[in-house]
Length: 365
Image: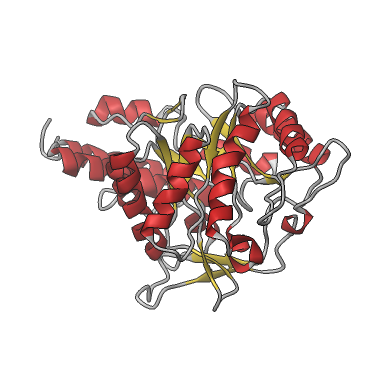
């Protein structure tokens, strides 16, 4: 039996059964494809993570993500506080009043939902959030599953100083909760505010914030998320360069685009095309930087293209959250189970099939 037929057998088998924790090992043994990846220096059993958002704000959700077979997740972004409890970015603590699935015109079957919502970061105060983060760490994190933190602290307007104590206090609280890998979430909704009108100031954020986080302890690793702003590809790359100059260990590429006509961040295939170009350029000119890709992932082929462009892993969210018009092949389990089964095992456009087709191994024993 050739490798593609073995893949079809696994796809059909696990459409009925639960995906086992050692799926990557089964794929390596039966098909000869290694799915191992990394998030900075964290080994991952496969390259697929759940991105921070409405699906990573409770420990129960994270437990479901782990049981489904994802390699890890980034927990919902916390808005930081100073030692006195003051939160300068309190406007970013906003629960959504709506969450909608949007579809591009050429997606008549509704297979690629794009999430529109008016929420922002986690609404909880820091002490409550830390209790949640501790629960995730104790009940989920092990050598088969990684959990990464995500923070947003004071971002000054032009002419203002950074509130360094807010960055330090928040970083210390997250680090003491067991998180040494921290993303900096430059919220996409800021694209609709005055905050992002000054290019030099935005570059100052990227040049300064990684150092503010790392000043707490040299054990922490920092991954700023790139904003998608409408100033062209050169400015997008300038943000990456500024982050690296500021001490970033890696980059998350990147945030959704802000669309004024929707009053919301917007992702989907357009975002994936933009991010693929960014990743290729970053990999060419900043070869040592590690990259986590996110945006517009609806198939294993999409994830594979990100990794071919130079990403070390791939984060996804909208496809899991959104209403998908075509039924999933997998009949057992929840949406996390069904999505990961399709992303990894689908013989048409799954991750393993894409790797087989790339290597020319699809007809070998």
